[in-house]
Amino acid sequence: MNISNIVNAVTRTLEGAKIPAETLPATLLKCISMARPGLSAYKITAEIIENNKLLGIPVGPNPDGSPNKINQYTYNVVKTIVDAIKNDASVQVSIPLGSLMIQANGANAGGPIVSTGTNLLDSIAKGIMR
Image 1: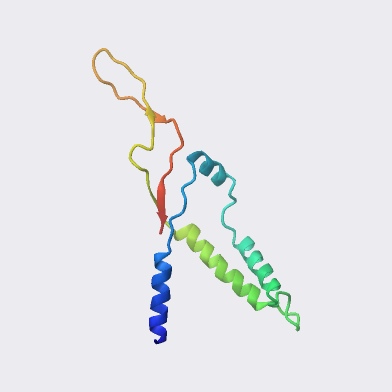
Image 2 (image 1 turned 90 degrees about the vertical axis):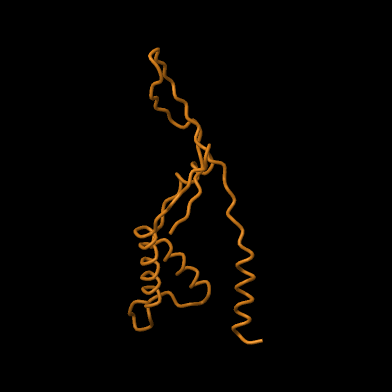
């Protein structure tokens, strides 16, 4: 068995193990999402640098006092990825049929009228970030 066969076998196994994310109730999802701070390249970089420290990777200035290039590289990579997610990603959603409940009130003795309504309950839209 060569390396290509091993990689293909592992890839097939991992692809078969994909489990879709669990759907949260709409009200809980709304409350959780309102409390999220958003992506921060600084915060992510700080967490990576802290993890590097725990792994024994040098995180302070170099012995000659110059800036740590690993930290600078980490920030550069993280900032580029965060910027791409924030500025280039497109979120496309689909709201399932019947998930919005509309209450429209109106009456007219002359015939039908157009009424405007709003949803009465929180609804969930499934989407894909691309």
